[in-house]
Amino acid sequence: MSKVIVSSLYDSAVFKMACRQFDTAADAINLPEHIRDRTKYPRRCMAVALPISRDDGSVTVFEGYRVQHNVSTGPSKGGIRFHQDVTIGEVAALSMWMSWKCSLVGLPYGGAKGGVIVNPTQLSPRELERLSRRYMQEMINFFGPHLDIPAPDLGTNEQIMGWMMDTYSTHVGHNEPGVVTGKPISLGGSQGRREATGAGVAYLVGKYLEDLKIPISQATVAIQGFGNVGSEAARALVGYGAKVIAISDYTGGIYDPKGIDIEKACAYLRYAKTLEDYHLGEHITNEQLLELKCTVLVPAALERVITKDNAEKLQCRIIAEAANGPTTNVADRIIAKRGDIEIIPDVICNAGGVIVSYFEWLQNMQNYYWDRDEVIRKLFAILDKAKDAVEFQKRKFKFSRRLAALTLGIERVANAKESRGLFP
Ligand code: NAD
Image (tube, rainbow, N blue to C red; front, side):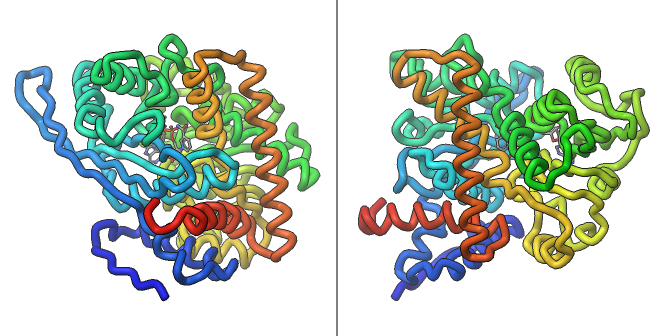
């Protein structure tokens, strides 16, 4: 028998959602009681105060977190989020999903996630550098190429990873590129990493459209969140022949049924930073974007945006979950009951990012670098294998696609824990 004693530390809607997903999957595969709770709950978490000096000479203290969910299947791996609404419960949920994702696609990693409560758009570049370096400095004993390896997530980017890698390397006294992935190429970043998550999303969308016998040239796409993942997914989908009819950021969305020129929108964002005043297309809200009639809806921003309030109103054929946790459990059930929408669940849909992060880490370990074609070819091969495994599990047990993906991921973590014993 297993008995769990847990505090309210992670209490939040998103952590409860991740736990409910776990419980459903554990029930579906009859995961033995004695292994459940230690597979489910995070292994450890750190909370740190991050004082930095501001450009005006004042000091602000930010709060940062790192949750290492599972280290039984290798060093833990997961992004760092800079966002004003970060909570430790959200970071814990994201760390759980990283465990299942790495395990599902067969990477030798456990899952982790980090976050800082900050609106990065309100910091100057120098303040952002101080905060990024301070975060790494405070967590330095918990990071390392064989311990825990961060990467970019919402609100963080290559430059921030570069500062973190430099802070760590200065501390250990030698160059250690493998401590962080998603770095600039000049610091040991991988070819193809910047576009990997979006490219993987687009590749899987193409494969699922093929299964549905919908020519991609006839597909229309609406994308919520036009940051790293959303814009790269858009670029790749347009490259495959799809038409992107809506994009958005935190200020709102742009809709053009004739198709949005993605390169023009990216060029505009490089100097304007937001879509607020973009002149090509009709302005819509993020809520309206989700309910647009389109072939593929790509949530690529925050979690819990497809809810009981809009699940009935969706007018897409496929939801490609580029963001982590965009669909609440209730919405999932409503969509399943409708039966007319295919969901490509987050743990496989956005796995391209961590797969190419793994390639980056491998290249750093070997000091031997691959060209972009090799990276993308190997990325697609892993995604193909994961998709086949998920579809097989789905058919064999008559599971939903999410349940199929989660059970595969969870089972491998539980097996590793069982084989290793109680400590890891
Ligand atoms: P990003 O910071 O580059 O872009 C985020 C985008 O979402 C921006 O356009 C931002 O304006 C928008 N946004 C923020 N709040 C919003 C809101 N309330 N409503 C609508 N839009 C909003 O981040 P990213 O790296 O592209 O990450 C996006 C999502 O993809 C996150 O859920 C992240 O966890 C997930 N993800 C990222 C990676 C990666 O490699 N970066 C890998 C896997 C999953």
